[in-house]
Image (cartoon, rainbow, N blue to C red; front, top):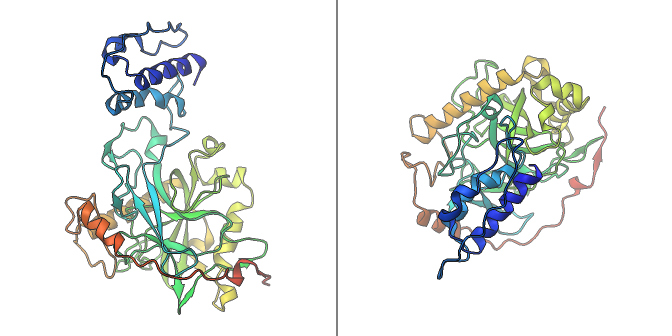
Length: 386
């Protein structure tokens, strides 16, 4: 954003704050053509009784303010570098307890399901019920919403609770014990921001044509390789670079490799070969981590389809789109969804749709009385494997 556009955006914002007659200056506050001069708009008259802040005027201003979020005046349009999140989270229960839950809210403050209510594609016609602009180039068509379950370097195995109403994030437990991934030398916790794509489902009743194994009954997993450490519950925009086929206890467990569009180097990454070139050793470390992370618990090494070879972006997009179609079938109750809870707030045509009031009642019924447990030893211990 150049200085001319920045000054103009500032004048228009102040106009909204001070209650200026917006319609009287609409023609004066247009962005100039590339290389043109900017004339400061004449200060408009103040209308008595005007609100100091009018949401309608601010909504009209949003397209202009987006200039400051990665768009350049007079330059070819490209994907935004910064994204204002449309979602918030609310914790219930205590961290490091079996009752801990992280619920999601939309921009209206209504509880939603991160599994079913957050759109998969960023450039969908409606993102969270808000009309969005049509994709301007191929890069836009490769933008997806990712729900971050586990921040990089952490050990607690957090996941979307697929079998609970509104699918909050919780810590996985097995045999009454909370799960933590072990530190297998030289790694500490998860080596990516780890999460999932909403509105996807790896169908456990359908064999994958590429692996000949059924799905793992979860949304498709995503390993985000950018430089920023995200927070649990973040909903970020990522672009897909490739994919790896993990076979986890006989089930297909795809791992999408993606990068946050806000990453300073995101524009350099377009396909899986760019990861090999610009982040040497990262993909090899990814295969090693996924192969060995269960070994300290006494389990065998994990296996991979394609001999652990990463597939490219085109292949990955095909897999993601297929899991999205599987989810569509499930959310419309056209297939066996097993124990998956499909309660949602924004899929009006779904037989599992509920009202915002019903969603709030579901959240308020969640118990919040657990006692904080001590940090697990696995977070502090190193494992050296041959």
